[in-house]
Image (cartoon, rainbow, N blue to C red; front, side, top):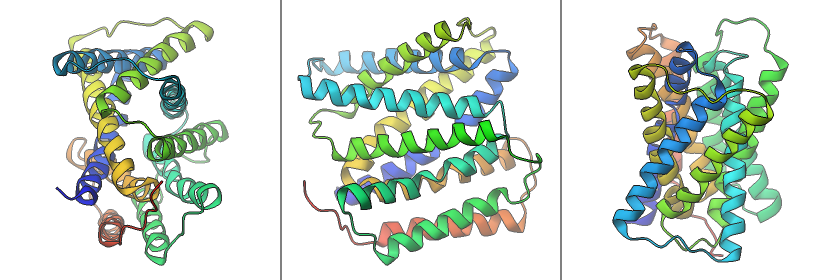
Length: 294
């Protein structure tokens, strides 16, 4: 299949999968689990599943020193991105956090422009503007009063580290399967959450009910394994900026979950926001592949 088509489909799939993060996290918080516990079991279970897949595929775990350093950087970036986002859910509504998180396509585009001299074409700028406008419409007038400054800072850190994660995947010379990359990334993330729990004086709590285990399994498979595996292919095949722009489908997914699962009203404003985001997606899909070879 055409690599651009595969990359685009993977970016869309990764965004939709990652957009289900609040669904699992908020349900587990309701069950009484703390943030490091939710993330430890999310990443730990995901790592076990990926390890089993690699064992079945008979993939070797050996990496070069350069590859190890790159994988370590990816692991550390994703630790910070996930932890800060999940902590922000305690300080502001998940929908508002998702809106602020979507600053990462702009961060990605600026970093690529400044450090990698990637040209920003009119279609790319248009797609960013349309997607940002659409995301703002999705949450315009969302109740909650003044924003918590600590929560805003946490989400901005999450957005920046997520943007850097996408760029490192795009630009790094990792010649290995997506499963092997995420074997190391997920291991770093699980270990990082255990370390955070230790340093912050919190206890790693076992999921208390079968329902909790169901949500942990959801977080491990959908917004962890599926999203991360597809993200690698997306960044490699279509580049950092288009992958980030297609991430507009993350908050769209969150809105649709609210409508379909929690019976939230579907308004004309929401419809217009989704239409603008889909228009941005179409612009990215139709855009000519401008990536320069490394």
